[in-house]
Length: 530
Image (cartoon, rainbow, N blue to C red; front, side, top):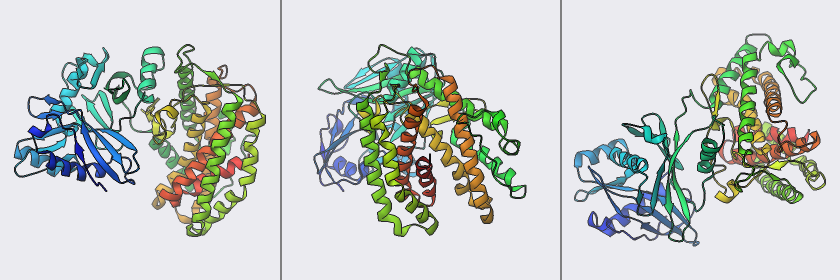
């Protein structure tokens, strides 16, 4: 709901009267997928930094939009505008890309989000290649990007909180629609990998667009990084492995789940033969490789001992107490949510939810060890939102992407150093989701009577693969300072982050996918029983 809109328009008024554009933005902005705070009432909108950018085909404005809410909070967004004079071209956008159209009128130019106009995308790249400074925007590029002789572009359809443009099927221009004050961790980490480490299993840095504030602060508008050839996310590749795993199980009469090796670390030769009948060695090796690449990422992030932004720091008791407070507060909040929604849950799910609530005191007691067990390890920069969906797979190897961190956290929080076991726990939880997700995503493939048996074997697959992942991870980075000195310290860190992640997932599934709620509930119970 928008009550008022104000324009600081620069040259825009020459293209369209202010009042008309006010009304258009009033309707347009709240409906954009990249506009994040839809639950608040907008008090006013200010269109700023609208210096005219002349193109060969259209007039553009490299503008930002300041949204001020009734509670006096505000958010700034990048919204470049294009004014289309040609009726045929306007009809094209109305018919094929209606979400790009800000305003349409019979006697005025059609106003669209300029990122959807090929001519404007060409201008953006040209300004990057020339390292231009235009209005409040600074364009920067590397030599690698400047080797492009000719270029074509397309905007990717998955336009959500960010917008991505791909040039020549080689380079991504990722637009951060919400302009947040400070350093974006993704740009910082991708550039760090490219310029100061030998880690090459992440995108290569190509350039950036930076918005300079009047008070000398800055916001990152865009990151340019190379496109990594791939066949999709590791999540999809893992579901394919699980599909084959479950298919093999359904070809034989029901058989008992094998005993797990007693050791925390597990290698292929440790598995019993009746497990190897269904879990292929290639599947094991694939997960082991992901553990290795994860360790190499963390080694790279811990490699700079001088830079304040990246140099590892010792974990201390203050850090442990803060982690304890955060996880306890999360448990209190989300367990209350479970109680509120209990009566609406299916009976089987409700039974597991009650078991989770019953173990609250047990979980809190486990967390108390953070007060009494000093963890001798360092904290570093981390990925921050690590799971199978943040990894690309190309049939032979893995490449890690999307270093923004958790999008609901502030830039400062996302740049804060923590134990890399936060990332490790995130990936382990993703294995757990994959094990059950293959069954829940494709109910037509699996006969209902077979589901309990398949779920048991799914949990066995998860236990094997998470130990495989952790084994290779620890083997790769065993001598680094971010690995705790004692096994009980390592276990305390890992279980704390696994609990934090699973409780967060419980709250998400309660609101988004109740049918999947049993997955994180079981994750909480596994921590309680460890």
